[in-house]
Length: 391
Image (cartoon, helix red, strand yellow):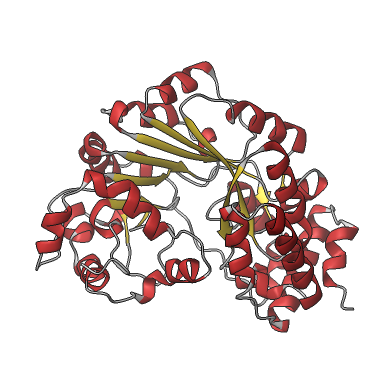
């Protein structure tokens, strides 16, 4: 196996999107051949060991940088630890790497031991960079203001989602077969703490003492005593609270949030025993304004930061930033690195910013999209609007 490209994910991990789409992981390109869990009769034959996954396993084992894995290649080039590298560390100890190395058929003889489960799009926020597939409130907003959004010709039409799959027999059967072997369970959303079957899903992990649970939350929902008790049974807890701005900027980007509540959640969760805690942020167009405050907050309170890159929609990526704002953010990062050279997340941001290429078309689309949201939500901020001012 070629260590520069090998990835354990197609051998040991599966993700179910909020609409029931089966994919290997959250970073795979959306043009990778997929199946919806409602459309398959046999998980192993129809998806897990179908030709697309066999080919992906073969390519990555033989040194081919699969085109569907471009996000990981870009992350690694930017100096960020990619999902491929992270999962290779986390899942390899639970798999038979010798058998994989000897495989000539690239058929996985065991079901996934890592499951990234997104049980619907229920969410109480309307984050600027999010979409209707991941937020029920955005889905409702898009329907209510259909005419305004249709004026944005570059915006993808909203598909007809079906979020009923968790209640159907095909998923329930798969769930019962997979859960006894699961060693890493990731719960996302939407907002996972609003999902009705959350506790029963966690309880279904049989060997909690040898398993890890990972939850990404927006920080708006209380962790009750029963929930904390269930979490404490796992070998390790990974908790991320999403933060994309401090105070009014956070409330603007993560529309519906209240910064005092988010702050309270961070304070409580960061003190949980047996927990790896991080704040999670998306590097995007608005980050030239918002990220310095996030970085300063994390440094002052000694918090680790999980960096995500906004690749879609492209008009909210860093390539929509005006050059002067990109230069200001990069200068800030370099100044922080002089005092904190060992902070990997600062180096990750620097590496990604160095890939910047200003795209005026993306900038104009970002302006139009932001203006549309501001008009609908009536929450325009002068500091956000200043991001569109050329010097």
